[in-house]
Length: 256
Image (cartoon, rainbow, N blue to C red):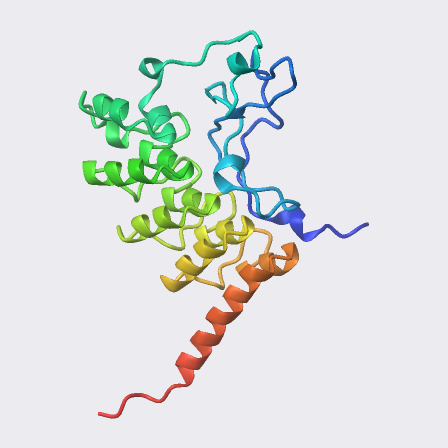
């Protein structure tokens, strides 16, 4: 029986359906791709650790962002019209950072600011997952609860860490959220940041006290993941942090 590779047991978040759903008009006639939203922002592929986090996290549903060069500019026929802002839910508006429309929705009341969708994602979780920092800041000021967990214990902090959005991570940590929250997908914010090769995010989480000893369901610690995936910069950050902790423990107590 062949041993499994370390990457087979790394913490990732995936949608329940494998592959991409069939969406009319997903591919243009010239083979150009489109960027698509998903409920579960995906981590960068191990073979491309430097990929932009915000681009790699957008896959899987019928709500689409336009490409830099649109089909109309290419001269192609548009086979499906994009959704108008008026038809989007408060969660979709938060994910896309449409602040003006989002404010209009929230003024309707009914505690929409913390309303979960079918998977338990609140507008704040969506905005955090897609790196919309101004939307995150606005939602927090409006009264969004950063402690709310989705149905599989996903948190705004975990998804922001997965995407490598360090500024959002800092905002959420300032709200005293649980930095070591463990979700049912088998990961903590630090594990997800390491898994995505997000060096600055790893540094920020460690500086705020993230636990280096917490293991994924597979038994991998953050250091194990960094070594297994060959992420040398992340490994160096963790090693430097461990060294600082060791040096701090050796310092004599201040004389009274």
